[in-house]
Amino acid sequence: MSGRHAFQRPLKASWWTRKPAYRFYILREVTSLMQLIFCFELLWALRALIMGETSWLYFVEALKQPVWMGLNAVILSASLLHTVTWFTLAPKTVNLKIGSKKVSEKTIKSLLYMSWCVVSVLILVFLWSASR
Image 1 (cartoon, one colour):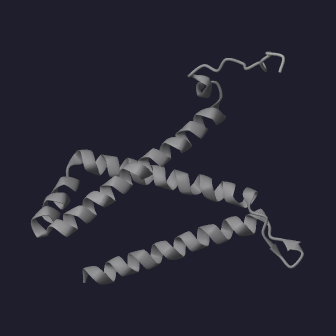
Image 2 (cartoon, rainbow, N blue to C red):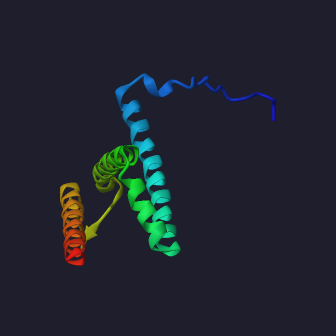
Image 3 (cartoon, rainbow, N blue to C red):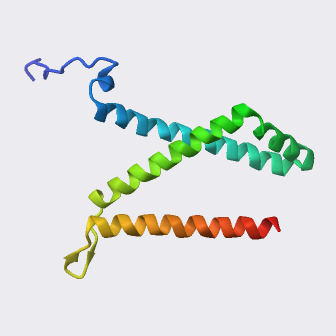
């Protein structure tokens, strides 16, 4: 080796503020952090269930606080954004063929949205029947 180093352009910490596409990229990445927070909330719920009725009632009361309700609204919004952007990206990365014919991106995206709706309806039906 000659001791020469490849040129590396310095990258400022604010690189993502230059273009709207970069800002949207960072926003989408932050949605993953919201998913992490929700996972911890689910673990807290599981722990409350394991510890008994008093712990569960405390958990339910804690979630009724405005801070938790607001956080869950932000998490839901982030989840929806993450899902929509993922469904937009997925057809570009999947090379799905039936026989020798490639399945169109529109078809893949439509199937993803339909499956999302079907699963959502099934969950709502389950929750509705369990609450009766």
